[in-house]
Amino acid sequence: MARRRFWGIVCAAILVTAQAGPFHTMDELNFPGRLGYWGVVILTGALVITPLSFITRQLNRDGCMHWALAATIASAIAAPIMIGLVLFLEIRVRGLIPGSVTLIAIYVAGPMTIVNLVVNGFVALGDREQKPVNADAFRPRFVDADTIDPQAPETEMAETEAAADLPDEMPGPDALPTAVVTPLLFEKLPPELGIDLISLRAQNHYVEVTTTRGTAQILMRLSDAERDLAAYEGMRVHRSWWVNLAHVATHARTAAGGMELTLSDGQKVPVSRSQRAALRAALPGRDSDGDLYEAAE
Image (cartoon, rainbow, N blue to C red):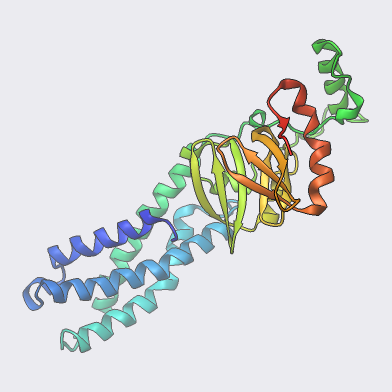
């Protein structure tokens, strides 16, 4: 609901409906009256049914019911609110006494349910077409860097990494394969932004996610995103910042004696005092590549 696309769709729906004048509003109300009437109905409906649909999708993350049934349940919960609103507007705005509450309920609940099913259908289609997360986009910390000689041949390093990934006991033939869990952050992130993260920044109840393709705000806590990304080469450097270490360009002292990172997109990120030692320990691993240097103090 915080996205401009959502409000753009709502405004467009109000304008189109006010221009069309359905349910006899064209004959009984002028354009400003229709704009106000349908503005109240559509805006209220969007503000009521959108959170309900989001909640039903979240409760149905394990796929225990079909998305259409979940959307229908959300519509059924919202229907009494919208029917009451329309009855109020019919009496106070249009000066009509509804002859049949049942007929009004059908007129309200029917189109509302159909629209909600269409919207949720597009959401479900987008979720199905979303590409799986490629774990190779980051460098997982599966191997302790201190145990690997940076001068060793690439084949020897590969063998060491492969050995580190082997479990202590090989599973039996009947053991089920371990499922690859996609971090919730990537499920919420718009697909067009990709998954090459640069940074995460806490913004009240949202996380501002920056990738190499752009920025978006995701409704989740930074601590939850950090936990989801624990297997990847990034770290929390400040109470409000998580950074992908692969996109750290420079790190330097500030005039006030603190520490600051410059990321590949030019962002300046402060480093809390408690994280400086851990960050310094994590950064030198890339100094030999020439991608990172200690800026002059």
